[in-house]
Amino acid sequence: MTGPIVSVGLPVYNGGDRVEAAIRSVIEQTLDDIELIVSDNASTDNTQQVCERLARADSRIRYSRSETNLGAAVNFNRVFELSRAPYFKWLGHDDVLDPKAMELALGVIERRPDVSIVHWLERMTDEFGEVLREYRPDQGFNIDGETPGKRFRQMLRWRSHGFAGDPFFGLIRREALESTRLQGTGMNPNYLLMQELSLTGKFVTIPEVLAVRVYNDVRVTAPRMIRWLDPTGDVRFPHLRRAREYFKVGLTLGKMSFRDRAMTAATLLAYHIHPRELKGLIWDIGKSLRASE
Picture 1 (cartoon, rainbow, N blue to C red):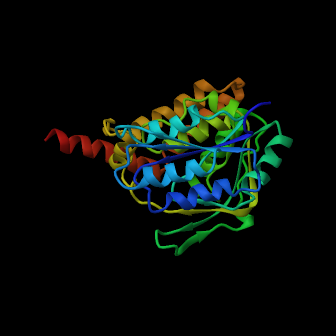
Picture 2 (cartoon, one colour):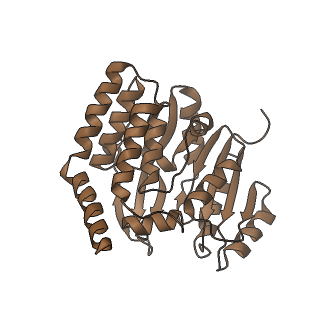
């Protein structure tokens, strides 16, 4: 094999105050056979200067810049499309990896051809470094079903009950990602992508805190999230469109037996009539009625 064994993709917009720490946490990994793709979404701060300086000092860093802000979804997908390695990881511009994270994750995924993602526990902080939550080893949540349908249903439970770490930011098998539609522009597209990936293989959690992630509330409402992902995105009926996509993924994309598909359909129905999900659908209807007045 030529080229790196692991690619890390770092999409960024106006992250000049934090992006250097994120980049250094990649190039200081104990795994040397690594590349870092930084995609700058037309930042207006000093992000470009910081990234170009670091790229000049280390040939493993590739910096690319868009002339206009295309939205976070395009930028997240772009770093993957520019990558070359058989294993890939997304990294937030304000997140920091433990130096051994990639080496440990690579050791697991290379031994397990049945695994699509290896992730780990995380420490969540606010922008000032105050710890908001640190996951314990007993909070690890593996997606280990032997059939695509069972893994899809496990992923729904993971989505419902909270999580220890985030597999979206884990180490992902390239061929698994290539079989998906990548990051979408609807509501919570990272969860939908994880549902797609659960159809391709298992998710394994390393029971150790290997990343510090900063909680960012810029996407706390559906319209704000959609506009962040795509400045021209459709903000109408976000919960309904998300439900439609979940059914589409669960019932049409996976190679399931009839029994597996029937169980998945029943689980999806139960999931979406839960009060938590119904609240979102009612919000859609109310928003539409108010807009038509």
